[in-house]
Image 1 (cartoon, one colour):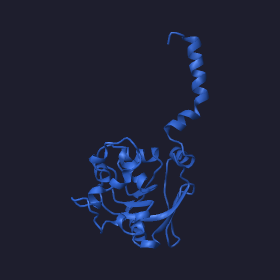
Image 2 (image 1 turned 30 degrees about the horizontal axis):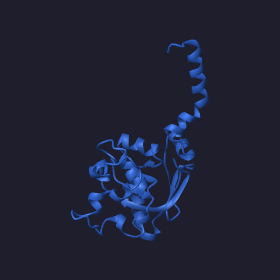
Image 3 (image 1 turned 180 degrees about the horizontal axis):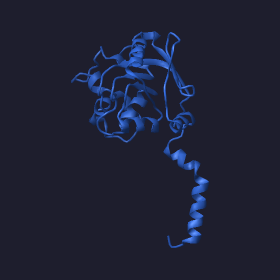
Image 4 (image 1 turned 135 degrees about the vertical axis):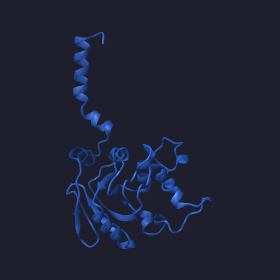
Length: 201
């Protein structure tokens, strides 16, 4: 998993509430278990018409938001089914940080497991960030995980909370497999002890 320490990039705004995982990545894109190539289907029902043509007014089709790495979203983001393809699609498009007033629990957990930082902030702070994100080429923000703050284009900063364990995992690029490997010596010692004391096990 790629490390997340400090991210400076374009912030896109999608101030819709109750954006569910089917809206993030519709079911027709779930035929693959690969984590790449899903970015094209991200928000497909908002980005394309029934003929598959791009809807020009959608934020991610307009420069500079085509290169966005930070998404400012609405309340209850990631609700609905627990599909892991949702954070995969966001990551494949280029998003490393999602900021919203609240997230669905499973989606929130899946973000951390896939190297995406979900940040929860009060609606009043979200409104400020949406205003910052509406500035086109000037919609550049910095998300500093170590300092736990978001810095806007005007230099102001907004602090945020994050679980210490999840913070460490993101900063060191540790997914569940890497965390298990950290315990390899203890696991091997346990297996040897079991093999000696309970050889029938």
